[in-house]
Image (tube, rainbow, N blue to C red; front, side):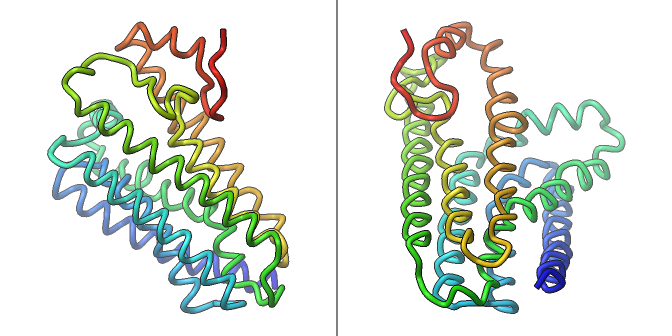
Length: 262
């Protein structure tokens, strides 16, 4: 079993590195490294579909996981593409480009595209192992719980993204801090929803052989969203641009939606 899991991960790693290399070539043509964010969700779809096609285990559970990953990845990629169209490169990547303008073209392959591919393989372990598992050969309570947790996260991320998009594109809100709807209870309800979806997939994969090992998937994406590419990175710039954001931080939960602090 361990040997087959290693084989699956290696095959998917090779496929995803090829996939992100193609994305990198497109970024060189368009001079926009931030298209890596659009390919992020699509990469999860690719890994899940390849695993399903070549290493499928118990069909019902495998199909459930693939559908959940497909819905999440497709929605996320479409949203990011729609949000960034006509805006050029994301400032985060432009800052990286400006630090080493001569060599960024090759640096971006390793530090942006291939790095995302490696992270993607780790985060998708729950999906990969859940899809390939032959047992249990029946639907369990954990499957229903996992689907419910995933659905809750999907609703949170989708609603939060819609609310933020409408807020940003309303001229009356120029320079203001988004603190309405789900954003009233959490500074990053979209990140909370994304994390919750991967906890849901982990719960579905939990009863399968070595399923407990895949807890690294939700832990890793939660850590990334909180400490690496999500909350920490975004808020460092928001505090500089909008002083009122500091007050928002004092009264509002950073991640899990909670009542306002006094």
